[in-house]
Length: 34
Image 1 (cartoon, rainbow, N blue to C red):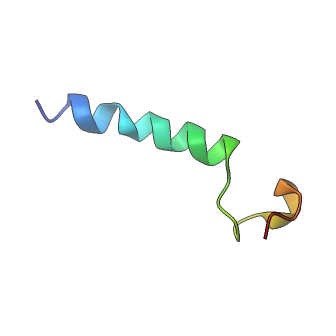
Image 2: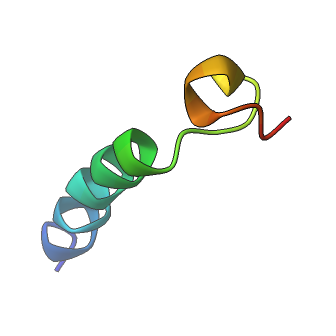
């Protein structure tokens, strides 16, 4: 019950962070989105 919810969003966050980095973490690599 609780193993399915945290198991899906866990890897999803890692992939999203690597594909869409947050503004402020590495704006230089993102292309200056800041």
